[in-house]
Length: 359
Image (spheres, helix red, strand yellow):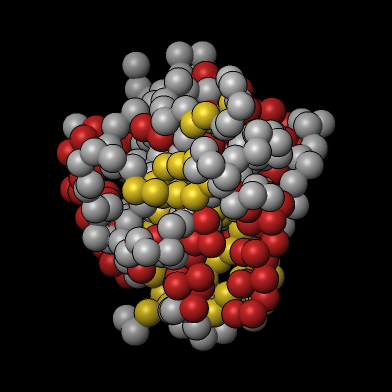
């Protein structure tokens, strides 16, 4: 049977290393039908990841470039694709569903879409995104909780990522908005997604991102730490453009990871919590702070579940005795992919997909 436009798009999105999981009851198609009209889905299914001018696209697709332009601009406005101005002209590109299309639905999301996405996420369970290497998310530890004598790589320091940028922005967390629309409001701060870029004034005209200063970005980082949120970013060494401050009640990645018996296996985590038994008073202040149920007190001092600890460090911030510190996780140390294209290549090999025709 011939596939319709949304089914073709779903197949294309699943060919991207990030994946777009097929669900037997068609939940994945219902999500796309909410986001795209049939005409939009058809065109999106024929776009490429590298981006093209309308002249290049028109020649490849044997279509009138001017006819394509109007539709592409609408699709960019609706967060379905990526568009930018280059020296060769305006370019248009296919983007993954996550991180990508989904996050760009922030302003459009309503209760209907929130429910569709929830059904899809619960049934798809992140297959293709979580269950193979490399992990998509990297936990950035709270540096104040790492033993002072340890060497910390630049990409493990959230402040470094912010300080090395030239533009900074702030977004409402779409995962928190989705849960709120499902009548499950989050108790943590909600505008906590920090976006940054290497060029100046990158967010001045954005409809989704509030332009902020470097100092405001660093302050938001500190506020998120104090609130108990977990710093996460793309699992690469360079080329970062966001820090998500996440919770297990809303974040669709950490929520899924927290349900596993081994949360640290599904996010890149270089550290693990350590307890100084001589300092620990057994006050249990840290236990409720941990979002992964990695802490317990079977006797007089805190015990760490090595399989559940993701090395974020937020529990150590509230220890009145200073008994908790982060130490390197034992075992083979493997550096993250160098950049986004390296991550894509490794993920494609791991998943057994070939996205070369999308490039």
